[in-house]
Length: 314
Image (cartoon, rainbow, N blue to C red; front, side):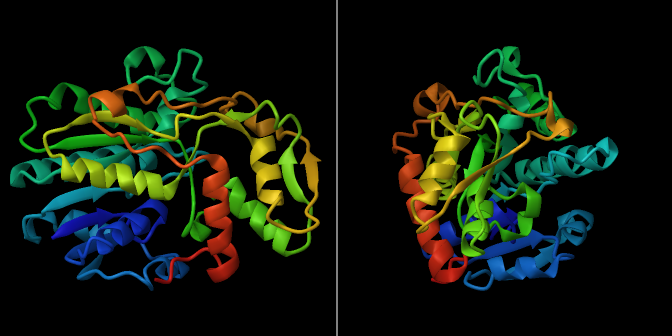
């Protein structure tokens, strides 16, 4: 059975869909449905069983040997200040899942984050010289990457960590303030409001990557079990929030842009620039497929937002 933790979440539910599109439904979804409306991400998917992540962690050994573990479950709130909680969920739990996967020789693919790079002053390469997280979320992701690095070569299973950059696309409703700017702009446009971005957004430049590309990268590594390591997962292109807002606005008749003052509490804690260095992914990872451009990705996402509210129904 394939294990997808965070399977009711954003990237996780899209991974389940990606497996389904390959004819795979022997899937155990592991997640937390205390927020019940996350079930909408699962409505159109096929899977064998569902279990709460706390029950899964507590009774791990009673589950059958996995075919692969795609570990997307995490606390991804970059404003969370409780370091003890963050490390328990993002570090200790991940170590347990890796150990379980290794005992069974099952591929272990896990979600890391571009937050490990902080402000990116030293670049965005998968190496310690570039890593300086600005918040405890980024630190929790870096901590596992650091713990995993010396174990990669000798691990008895394939291990792949993917450092996701700014991921956007269908099935992110439940993320609230952590949802992509495109999702928020769509809501404003459909309510007839101006599309709101921060002042100076022409200078805030990020690597925006469509969730379908993130799924494709995960499936590529499942198809190539000899490849292992920690890799960036971004488009490799840097685009401004100004361009993102104007590209999104072009899909809504009469949409206008409104600028808001930059929040004081984000000063010094906000990544002004990100751009995935894809050298390792292309060479060591062997991933050759091109990533969607921002224009292509926004057009695809807006179509789904308009037609089905942003959920996949196929």
